[in-house]
Structure formats: structure tokens, C-alpha cells
Image (cartoon, rainbow, N blue to C red; front, side, top):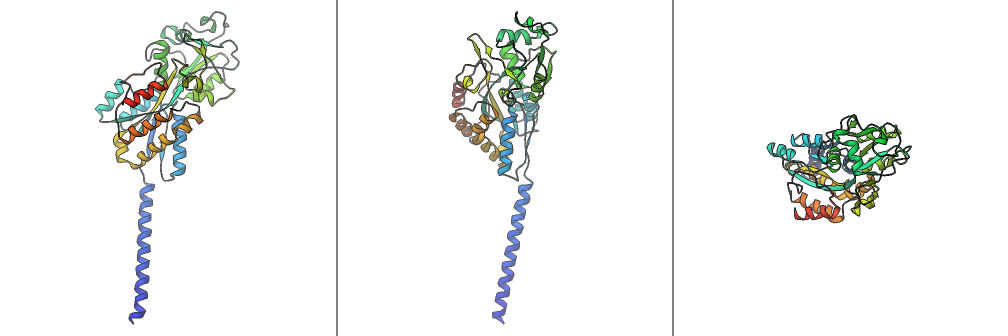
Length: 340
């Protein structure tokens, strides 16, 4: 009797063990499938990097959910400080007002530079006259006093044709708008208003592509993404006309329109959410290859190493004191990060 009972007990025990393990695995699967989504918004300039990395991450982590969008740097940081998103993409450093808003809401942030950009002036390929442009001419076009007055190309430079000057550029929630107005006009947000504005750089690109009389500006990646459809205009800041390119940014020659790009991570969310921590580490690791693939300038290896160290140590704050630094080079950014 005992001989026949033992196998029966063993079978029942094995069955119970199998059922228990299956239940545990199912429970783990449910937890994974119910992972809190990682929400990202902000700069349309940084968006191509973040979106590519997010897609890659979800391919290798099918249970993860990463939601990417863009509403401009200002729009993204507004949501970030309101705790609506976990990561803000930014094409300029967080400013003093945003720092104060985040502080009042109890939001501590980790600042991670991820790339360098060459803010690019573009015209239609049918434009045969604008072979270069000076910073002074860009100011003449875009300053508030130009509104309703500088409306033809020949008003910008004698010898250019008497043709309408149709302008396309970022909206006021864009970090590109903030940086451009400060670097070119001399004051943040100082700009004429009579132009086609959008936080979506693809809208700007399409506008210039469709109009032989157009001029616009945005990040280098959107120019690289439209080969043959747009013409980049070399910019002369007093040392000769320099074209926007990876080489010229790396050589610190494309000034004052070269600038760093960032992501800002909610420090508490990263502490509380393992999925967010894993995603940010994946972002830093994969940034060099992705940045180059979408058309921006990768940081030196040391830059990503410092980003990884600062993230692992939850180093909160910014090295920019609430304002952009014009004419910043890759080497200067590294020195700032090293002292952080």
C-alpha cells in the first residue's frame, strides 16, 4: 500500500510545484506588462534621437512602454516641472524660471548632455543667390524691428533679387527659437512675428521645400533628413562663411550656432522606477551611434562616461546657471561636466 502511495504523492507534489511556478511566472509577466510607461516630451530637435533610441529599446524590451512626443523645449520642461513626464528633451539648458518652477514643485532633475547640433539656415534649392549669409544679415531679417518692413530679399543684401522673403521658423515654445534669438538678435525671444511658426521642424522643412523664396532655420538633423530638397546656407560670423557640418562643429568653427542638446531626467522617478533607470542607461550607451545616424554630432567618449557617472550618482542640478552659453565648444562642455 505504501509502495503504491509514494509515487502518487510525488506526482501530486510535482504537479503542485509546476502550478506554483507557472503562477509565479504569470504574476511576473503581469507585473512586467503593467510597467508604468516612461513619458518623454520636449524639443523637436532632440526628438529624432530620443525616438530612435526608444524604438530600439522597446525592440529589445518588449514589455517596456516608452511614449515619445514633442511640444518644444519650453513646452516639454513645462510638463516636466508639472510632473507630467519623466524626461524632457531640450535644445537649450533649463532656464532660471523653469528651475524655480521645478523647485517649487519638488522636482529634482538630472541634466544629461547627449549631442551637439549645428543650428542650420536653409533655403530652397532654386535659391541661387544666397550662397552665404552674415550674422548681421540674419539679425536684420529676424529682429522685431524687421516685422512688416524687411519683406524682400534685396532689403537684406544689395544685389539679391527683388523677390518676396518668406520666413519659416520655430514657435515660441521651441528651445531652438530661444537659442537663435539670443545668438543672432541678442536677446531671448526677441523676434519678428510675421512668419510661419511651428514647434514641428518637419512643418518648417516642408514650407521651405515648397517655396523658392523661403528661408528657415532648425536643427541639422532635419536638413540631413531632406537630401537634395533643401540648401544649407553657410554663416559668416566674422571669420568667413562656415557651413553647418559635423566636422565644423567638432572643430569649433561653426559659431555662434553650434549648441549642446540635453535630456532632463526626473531624479525621484528614476529612483522609484527601475524601468526608467534601465532606459536612461540604455540611452546613454546607445547615444553615440544614434546621434550620428540621425545627423547630429556625438559627444566625445568622455562626455557619455560623465553622463553615466552623473546619472548613477543621481547628480541633480545644472552647470549652466539657468542660461545658455553662446559659442560653447565640445571641449568646454566636457570641462563643465567634469567639474559638476
